[in-house]
Image 1 (cartoon, rainbow, N blue to C red):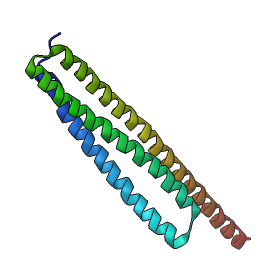
Image 2: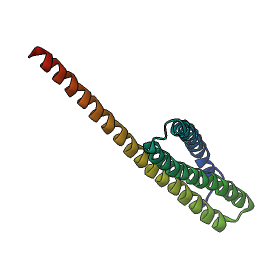
Image 3: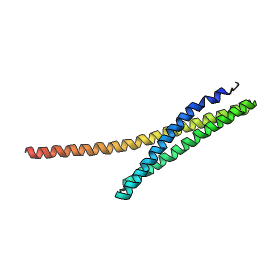
Image 4: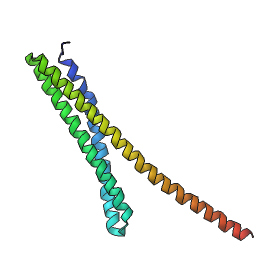
Length: 147
């Protein structure tokens, strides 16, 4: 199989969109961490430290997602140069490396999504428990007034 210059170029739009998405996630989480740190300094609520720790882990994953994505596109550019220079064997090896880096970036994305969903489940469970307790309290108050 001969690689032509257009084959590695196909990854550019996908990688660019992924990097924008990764950057947006990074900025949103960094903003949330700043907000939680500010809240912690005011209230000294230790539950916030757990959330900040979880967000720190997610930031690390996003950073590695970005590293793998950027390295993938860099290797793609080098692949294109090797194709231009006529070094097909090296171009194929580098293109395979580029695809593997993209796969690593996507796998890290799945892991980060799993962490994010898990954190949201905890928040929603706490909210549901609080609202159900409030609902029961209201009914008990109404029941006590009725009798």
